[in-house]
Length: 189
Ligand code: HEC
Image (cartoon, rainbow, N blue to C red; front, side, top):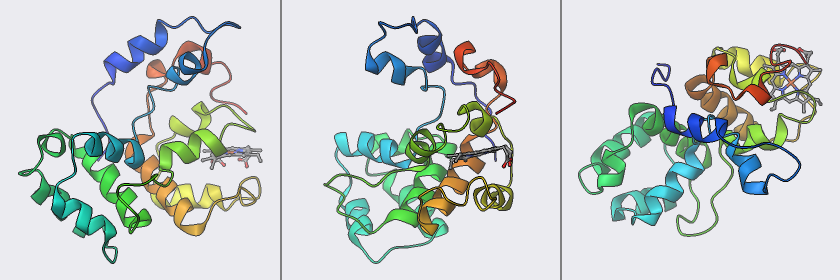
């Protein structure tokens, strides 16, 4: 299912920013606030409020598929208000992240999520808008990533799958939610 709720506040914050030569690095990052959080950021926020023991143990455990992570998160809702507060897209985004990334040390630095991968790897040849406004199936995303223009991008197979899952859930952002400075040429590359 697609995210239907406009991300109003982050967008307003991004629009209010003066993007010019003097913009600070964090302001430049803020222009991307309209792109929904990925699993790493979601997990970092949950961690700040204290991860329930069941979730930390599962993250260190043998790994699991998306359905099993959805169930683990559903159970953990009762133990942590911050998990209960995730909307269904966030919970799904986190479940897909954990399916491709876990196990890892839940207390250490977390591996890149789909949003990190797009911002780091998908802006050097074209504007990020080309990516995040597309409404595609998982197969179509994987097809793009295996096309001649994209196959050389340095990502592991698991990262390609993670990015595809992240984009299925979180891309298809309407162009009017994209900050104007990222719209120019948004449909071209
Ligand atoms: C090395 C340069 C390069 C990088 C890096 C790059 N792209 Fe592209 N991208 C292109 C070119 C060239 C086109 C237009 C031609 C084409 O469609 O292959 C394109 C077009 C696209 C399109 C629209 C047309 C299509 O084929 O679906 C999408 C979506 C896309 N890129 C996604 C991505 C994603 C996701 C990433 C990051 C993982 C990325 N791109 C990184 C070169 C790049």
